[in-house]
Amino acid sequence: MNIPPPQSRAATAADPTTPTLSIVVPMFNEEDTLPALFHRLGQAMDKIGESYEIICVNDGSTDGTARVLAEAHDRDGRIKVLNFSRNFGKEVALTAGLDATSGAAVVPIDADLQDPPELIADFLEKWREGYDVVYGVRRNRETDTVLKRWSAAKFYQTINRLSGVSIPSNTGDFRLMDRRVVGAVGRLRERNRFMKGLFAWVGFRHAEVFYDRPERIAGETKFNYWRLWNFALDGITGFSTVPLRIAGYIGMLTAIGAIFYGIFLIVRTLIYGIDVPGYASLMVAVLLIGGLQLIVLGVIGEYLGRLYEESRKRPLYIVESSLGLTQDK
Ligand code: UDP
Ligand code: MG
Image 1 (cartoon, rainbow, N blue to C red):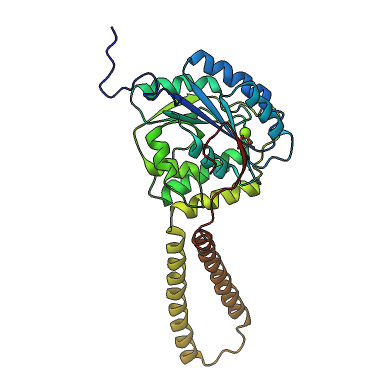
Image 2: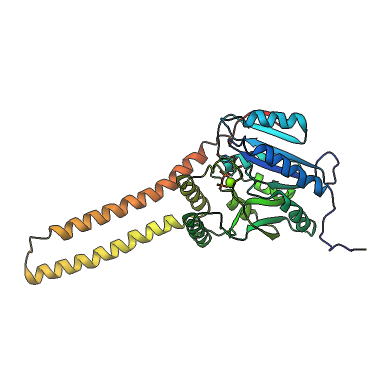
């Protein structure tokens, strides 16, 4: 007989009313991808053979997503639906999905089948070995454009250098989390929800599973470069105050430079007398310092704006309707 390691988990959830696995799918205008998603996800889950639920968070879709979801729920009660009152963004949709789960292990997955559902079996195996978090790590980024690859690499480099938590690069939200991890993440109610950062912040024992990320099966990406840029700003400001400190250093360096330049000017004037033409140097100094001040104000503004958002304490999301879920949050 195969004796499991001491920390390994029981095969199924202890409480028979809750499923072993909860899959969370945030979706925004995904009506074209849903039939294939349910088909492949269902197949993968049947193969695993554990009890499961699929929590679909309809993030204010304007296409037929809500209708497709309602039909899917009618066919299979394990498919549960949360309809948001408007688009709140993927990070919030994911949060709502995690809040609604009851499974012993939880797997967030994209609706466009870029996260292969077959990998869940491998996640589960690692989870049983006793790991609390099992990341899906992309083996390569061949399906991304050169610019996206480069910017992603730079982003992870920056955020890992600036923040205290280490966010593994080439991971997305596709991972398995033990109930304890989901509970811990659920206690972080900040509005600035950079989920990968929050997942990393809570810690726990983790393992990796490598996979190749295919192209989206249908529809288009919802993340253009402007949205990705804002996402990166959220990530960095949410997990580091180093930019504020850099602002202070910029001020200090400029002031030191100004002191030396001032001494130089005084000495020069004492030796050579008053030198009236000096328009160019004056202009350069005024513009440079003005520019630096605006940049620093902008950095402070980024933090101040986020502070203001947090201070209003609005709920993270508004649910318009739900199917198959008792708790209406
Ligand atoms: N998504 C969402 N709300 C949004 C944008 C996206 O729920 O406001 C979902 C989307 O439907 C998909 C997942 O987030 O299931 C990932 O989005 P997408 O595939 O567009 O991003 P990419 O894979 O290009 O980074
Ligand atoms: Mg995608």
